[in-house]
Image (cartoon, rainbow, N blue to C red; front, side):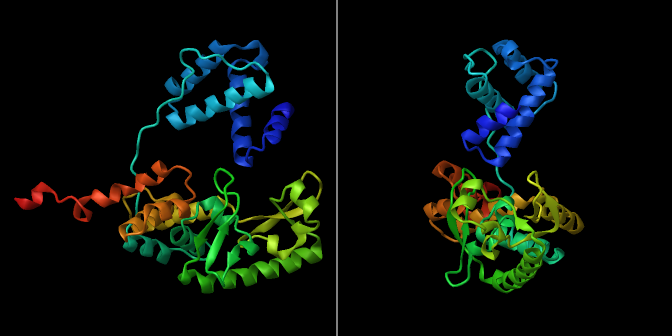
Length: 313
């Protein structure tokens, strides 16, 4: 497993992908009685993927992630790429319509939330941020003068710019004051920020002790890393996710409301207001326009486009 981590690091996979691949490789080895992958062939891979689909009933996306991890294992670690065999093929994911909230529903949920979850949800809806992009925002990436937010290292390790909602400015300014106060206490106690690579720290010495590299939403707790350095991470995603679920439950909403629903709503409401789809694609950070086209479903639903024949009876 140390070699697996090394190969993942050499190929600069994201931390989330590294953790997911490591977990799948461990499960694969345990599934086959802790035998070394060198002793297992394509049949063993096919059997494992079949068990995931039939016995555990995992989704096609989950099965494809497991397959990607095993392809990486045999190609880059074992150095014996898998041959194409029956059963080791990508599972086809069904096309699903995203859950989109109305403006009234968004307003109701915001009214049920308290700080900092309320500010996070406002940013996700107002700027189209993913939950991970929101909680990991750094101080230097919030530009009040240009009214924009710079998303660094988003999905696919891509940067992009997105508008800073005017309604967030006051609350965000107060949050930055709080972040500065926490940073000053941390600086006196020798606490550093997380998430900066070794290469970046070589280029910008002491960056993990500077306010501009600090998080807009710092965690309330610190921890000691493997190098025995005390650090402060950002607000955990689950804190916001739990707050959103609780708010939706209190309101009795029938829709399955998640943090990603606000990003879906951001894109849908922009298209409804006449924003060009290429602009929406850039704001969301989609590489393929076909991904953004998913949101055009709103343009031909009910009163927004097609009139139901039942309404003519």
